[in-house]
Length: 232
Length: 232
DNA sequence: CATTATTGAGGACATATGTCCTAACAGAGA
DNA sequence: TCTCTGTTAGGACATATGTCCTCAATAATG
Image (cartoon, rainbow over all chains, first blue to last red; front, side, top):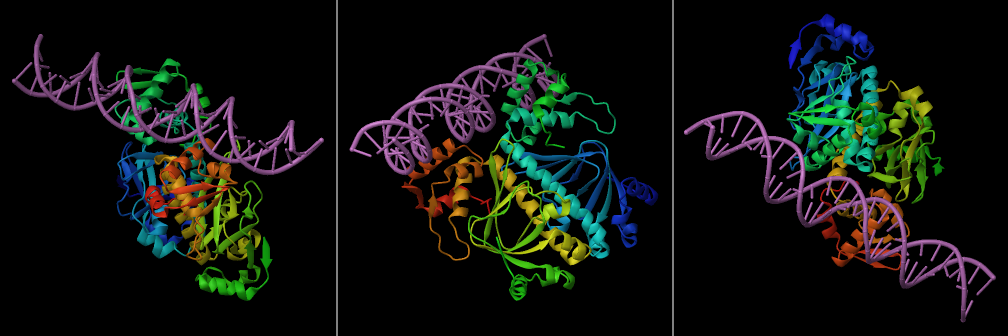
């Protein structure tokens, strides 16, 4: 992660998302812009958390790793989103791993400064309150989704999320096979079963498997299968 | 639900839970105490939400009903807990049904009054922020729990929750059979499978089934099976 | 009291998913 | 090039859970 020391750029991002009002003057000098490459880890589960970030551009995915080493995807998020809010409020270590799915820009600020300058600033409190309740609401839904629908549906949903690049309207429709094991963990199933479902999708003509890649052929059909897309 | 018009009682509950500081003077006249009988619905999913409640005594359960009519238990909660907070912040209809498991006392206040008098009062904002982030954190865990563990474990967990009366140390160890279908829905499985698992538990000597009741015999064994108890 | 309706437990089978193992294939070093 | 080794897809089987149906016990009714 690279810090970009350009207060004007910070300001322009704040303005672009109507965020100027949630921060007071006192905190402004402590806001900074950060950039992450695609694939980079923004936060790692279990690490002490020192920063709160506001995602202003790009796409991230959030996942958790259980004691037994299983990983489970929690969600994909695009701007505007806050990262590290729970940890900030609860004063706990990072609870989930956050990874940049695309190139990502975030406005970051240290917990200590935030506490010092905005802890009593209601617009800020109201802002994260809004964000967190929305997160909670979505999690509510995704939990039901996960409990009620089979892997087939979750995979379709996942594929749609991963192969789409929001910023431009183009998407590759390709998915590297290298990390199929990861993918399995992410949607909460076994590698074996993932393969089964992929094979199913292939023979249904929804996708094709070739040397190290999966090519999505019928995006619409995937959307139909996915129904409501939880991973967004 | 019955309103108890006794400002002094409200004050004493607030004091008992160190809640005086989260409300300002202006809102005080609008706080009122409410009482619910065991089994009574406090909030119903889909209804407009007008009140925010602070649970000060007793135990509640929160569940959701899907479009297809399936119900899924979300959690059990004891004091201190806030009910209707998400709805208050997001200004949406009630998202989950809340039911009194025991006799319940709550301090209630109308959204409109809260908005008018405490919307800029940081101690209050900080308080619900704390509560909601904690909820979020727990939901995070319970989601993993639900995805990772079989019905057996969830049932054990459920039984422990339902048959225990926090307030006193006595518990009945009995569970009415009348609502086994409900129970199945609540832990996210079918009635058929629930029966299977109960039968299993019976033949393992953990419980006994008799005329309309289930009697829990080996609470410790259930605890072992449940591991971390998500429904609390 | 006999008969019918209701309800709850469980049998039979289907499906989703997990575990373990194997075969095919690709890349690395001799 | 040949062999070794690691990786990946898929076979075989086990387990968890869902669906549908039946049977028995109980309650309701004539």
